Length: 150
Length: 150
Image (tube, rainbow over all chains, first blue to last red; front, side):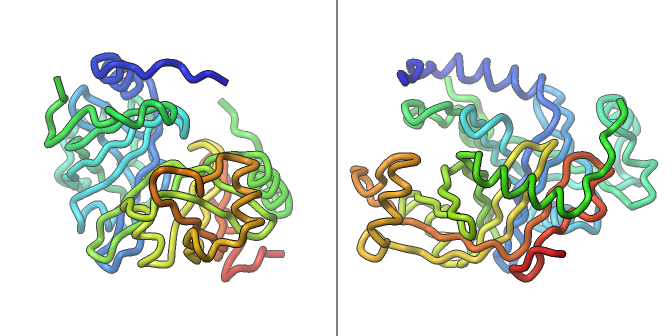
């Protein structure tokens, strides 16, 4: 099997942004202070700059997002990978902007109406890596320190 | 959209084992002692009881697997989820059994021949959770304390 030639940086960025727009779910990895990792799938809302997630406030992932203020997201597939390292701002039911919760609800479901107590988490990308096959490992970093590489 | 009815426990176990056999890659979440999570896709070899992974010994994931002795794997998709919490045994190039490295090489590639120094990691499942949609969240635990639930 011949791999496709490696994509140049600007194409990786375009493909990545198109995927952020089109996809619905992401894998979310977090860790607690003791060094235990969690990994769960969550739906996200992408606004062009940040991701918004929602999960139960008292879940391991919810607690880790708030306590560590960090997450790593994986979007796509294991053969068309986008990894996002981001900082996290927690928004409780009392502090989430109504229009943000409305937009999340329009795309997914209204987490405010759950019988469990949910919170919202805004993830701001700091580093983004994108690759398909082995031959794209070189040049996989397309955002560093919060800036898309040029 | 009407969701399929929730699968009973024995069907989830059969579906899960069939997926372990058929799939090639897994998402691997680990954490370091400071509480930073990593998340990467890796190819795996399933022998019916354990997963074998291979990655660069000096990568963040390689170091975390060895230091923490734990990993969480996600196999499948965000809408057909299998999560595996496992314990990890590290096998260096000097200690990996030749037949295991051969079997891994036959399915994927021979990590012993890499110009980087790889190690192999045997992941033994301790807890397994499997669900497709919301209606399968109840009953998602199908292995606990290393035993398939009956």
